[in-house]
Amino acid sequence: MGPDQGSVADEGVRPTPLKGIFIRTYATLKLNGAPMVAQARINGSSIDVRRFERRDLNRVVEIELASFGRDAWPADAFLEYWRESLELFLIARLGRRIAGYSITRTNWRGAELESIAVDPRYRGRGIAQALLDATVPRLSGPLRLMVSRENEPALRFYQQYGFVRTRLVRRYYGAGRDAWRMRLDRPLADARGSV
Image: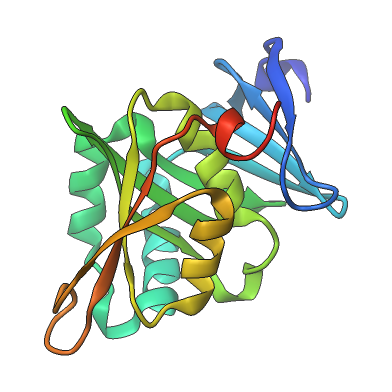
């Protein structure tokens, strides 16, 4: 990292459940002028996680469309989340390309993972895990989410991460489209092994 990009002492390096992946978290590091939250190295590729910026909108919408098709959110929804959840609307870059995003909102009950998506071309490379690894340590309470009952890859991923199913919500996504409510109660270090 060059001096024009800024620097800060690491908060720490954590091993992850996926072999050969380590997450390095930062307090206030800036990467190309944007605050970076975390960095991971996977098979020689770098995943940088930072807060969403307005200039990321078009790419985030592309990922949303590729991931959710007819259920994709419009661009205006992302701008609203950006205004409401500035600190927890994150994007992940693999190399120089935005590969995924996550949006988390907090309230008195804890936090809700509103949306997380990875470009289909980059799935299975640790992008979603890097986004959650950057989010969870910033939360003071449980993290909840909803996931389609039919989305087996996502269900497996969340369960491996430490989420548990708490209840089935009928018709959450419309007629005949149920969802599981899931919850992560334990802090990251407890849920996935010691740091």
